[in-house]
Image (cartoon, one colour):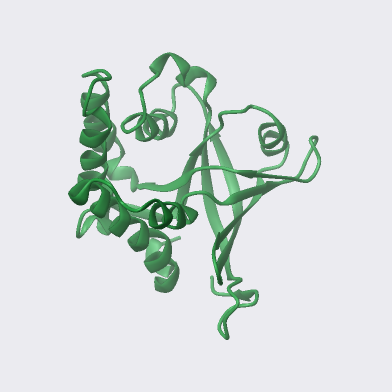
Length: 210
């Protein structure tokens, strides 16, 4: 699938909206908490799965990842930062790096909009279900009316996979780095198959847009 077939209105909301927030954080520093939390609805869907652990929904942080040809370059940049170690200003430098690699003006050409990445931190219900059945739904909701439902399949990546390294690094480039935990933090790559606009608008209410 080509990323250009993903609807532009979905990309505007989930990617460009998050990019604007990241740019504000990097350039202005503090962003009002209400705006920050509302903006994070683009990052924290309910991940719905079914399997041995029953029907389950779990809030997880997700984000787009680079196209294959940019994976190693991006990982190398992340690791260069991570290897400097935790210190005052680490998160601010990491945020500027994320801006440069993912969210700058024109960076959308580097992004594979058919895939989203996430980490499994709990190794509980979602982990049991997605190992048995890769079918998954991601439900996004931004009050008061915006909602998107993303359906697809999940790939699980563990130690030795570049996606495992990149998604762990993409997390630790901003948060306090813990490379010793990476072997216990599998990575998910969600492959988008369908998108529904569930917003409470004339164009929404469960309309399939992809």
